[in-house]
Image (cartoon, rainbow, N blue to C red; front, side, top):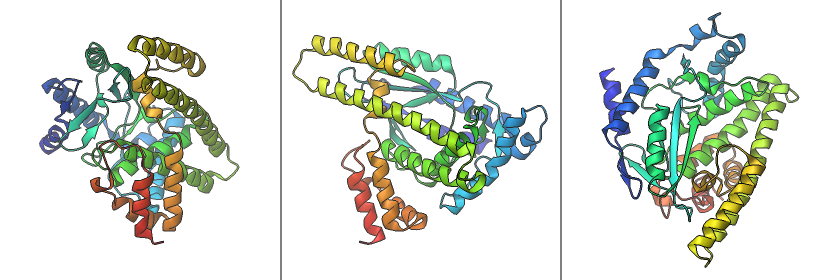
Length: 347
């Protein structure tokens, strides 16, 4: 336990560069306390899968996890001690994520961590503390997003458990679990400091592609589980596509010669209409910056996979990517990065 705490302290110590302010010892303490709670509350997944006090649907999903891990490892994902335990977090989220952005440009606040590098969000185990941090950022005039996260990863520093917040009811439950386990396993396989867009785009591409394969192999090409997963992804794609268009409209507005007052008024009109159309949590720049691209990076990853002839060489190419491949931190244009990585797979 003492070693676990020292690792957590090293990974959690954060200094904010820029307009967001500095994260102090309170952030460090809540991160340590939250992680220790997860360590204390976990139980072996095999035990949980046989516990009659746990709903049958949840037990069935837990029993599937070792099979999902083995499948991922066969596709080149790193074998880890993750997801050998289960924790009931007692709610819809395990952490509360705060991000912030300039109100009249898509320039995010960036936090810099000694271990994991520069990222565009910070996570809190306590919702009230996350809200207080969000309010401090809003007081600086920033657009702020506060959202719950059902999954959690220590990037291999500690064994991550399966969380109750990763499990959802309905026919799409299995596909959702497969996707999140594979997504987080990608982060344990490859992670580049300061390039969140690459990390998340890679994990999303791999998880979505492999989840379909897993469901076809284990449930069948015409199964309701595969159909439900694809329906869920189709609806999510429609939302992503729509919010990407909203992002583009606002980005054009922010770069226009209009006055600040005109930009703010027009921004409100655009966001009010988008909110009525798409719903969800309140839309602002901190939310919409997550939709600055739609789908193009997935085509580039698919091209890389095809050129490499399968997952083994695909992962070799991905692992060749380092900070020298990028022109700047948090670079969103991945095409030149992936084209350079593809050279490892030949012409």
